[in-house]
Image (tube, rainbow, N blue to C red; front, side, top):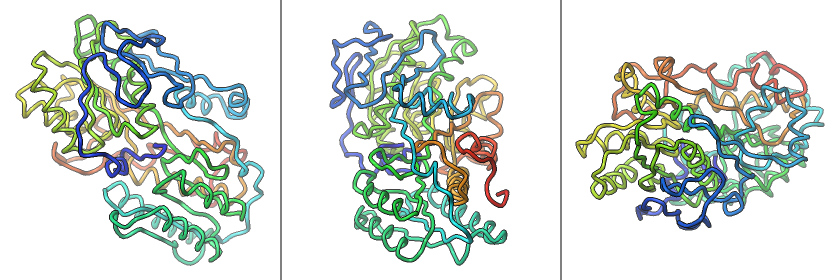
Length: 446
């Protein structure tokens, strides 16, 4: 979610290098602190799987699943568990797969401020549909809130013009300017979470909450880190029996995002842990796709050229399933089962067209859903509803063969770069958000 990353939005792509890294079976990815001879709880060296240690990548201690098709979990500290105990059981359960620190928030005791409120919106250059749709939804939400007398004026926006010239310092200046202008709350897509943490905390001390949609600022006390870490690797493996692969040898390929990004490291760790519970799976190797479809496709084609053996399973760290499908088709190979993590319209159209005999699982949050949820979180804080935790883990829905039609876009093809078409209320409903606040409901019933 990154720390710092938004895989499904494309920020990770900007941080990728042009080099393609191909890692052979049983080898560790450079920089993760693991080795080809290292072992971890639940790891099976014979199948080419070595789980990176939590210490090496800065996650909470991981607990690999014992049954194929289940998900890895993370063990949180006593202080974190006490904090989580303030949440309802259903909400608390979402943190079983949360790999990062869980902190209290100063907004828990914030009494709110009398409206109508001025709202700000800061983003780096709009490079994909997720961002474009998100900004449009924020404007629509603002208009709806204005009709109810909750906000005033217009949405105050600062969108950086070009990735070639965008800097964290520009965003810091925008935050400071909005605070001086009397903005009461800000939605922020930070370019660099660590560099901007001090500015976010200064705004918080001035009484201005800042919500980060699907982003994490681990060093900030006042940031509201709203994210969804759950992936569908475990649920995909749970489909092996329906695909007739439960008791057959399976060769797997792993496609990573950007290896220097903390959330990709956590997804890779949990993905390998999920694979480790499946005794019939052999991991042939790992390639780096950098959350870029051309980069991922090229890396996969290179790997396939040197690995002629059948590959029945691919796990990818988000938004690269189309590249997997296209690469296998171009190589004249059968399309494998793919963990459709952060799925978009292209891969979902393929899945929907083959749903009678293609078994998988996936997750997705489109820009409309993410920004509508962030806007309502911000209104709740301004209304003094008592946010209970700094790190708001709102799990994305799981796509399965039984509900794929609710997510696929009518008329979209494999080459579509559109987002998934799931309805607004499929994610971050008010009833779901109630679990993170002392008081239920969003101001104005929005």
